[in-house]
Image 1 (cartoon, rainbow, N blue to C red):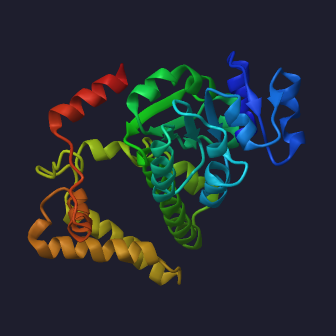
Image 2: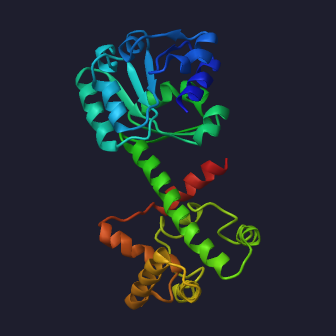
Image 3: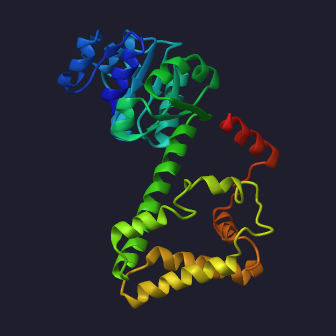
Length: 300
């Protein structure tokens, strides 16, 4: 992904110095006018702003703070964006070290996969100084078409982890429910085409949050918790009948049952999400006017 993002950045009219542990990975960039550097330090010495795209926290920390790394080449006032999926704790540690030297750091993990990195159809979630985000937004726009300022340092990485973890939890749930459906006798293609026509198939998993959890609006219900629990209970029953393990479904059923025992059965089915808020000791809320304004801005 780093190679594709760097190439798009270069094609966007930016002068570029490049480095990779495999020089051959930079061949297209060098042919397009980029200049080779023998180390991250040399990249930092010759650049106003530096971007890294690396496998994970260990590699980022080594490049940012290690021998022949960026810190040895960056001077006060220069800017560093890390595009990697990283630990917010590691990001904040590096930011603290850089800040003491007068160097700016922002975390900017991306989402879109290798295909998005090639096409530029890429989300970039940025944490750090908003003025620097605004200043370098044209460079970010040459890398991806959905650069977005999330908040202070580390917030971009947290947003990326929320996004990816949600996706993999949903992936696990889909494996569970589809094995149940197929073992219960439905053709896999017919099942897939059927569910894509339903309410969950017609919109993304985050859209409904603006209707219920974020504003804390569970009354009157769009779909009552008692009815939702009935549906999950029936699905778990099918799994039991056909000997399909339903770990996530049973966990969901237990969560709904606890919420009903709180006296919430008549409220919207999403009210069961309040139980996790209690356990985590945090409320996920947005003022309704602020939320409405944000939605209007997104719709253009």
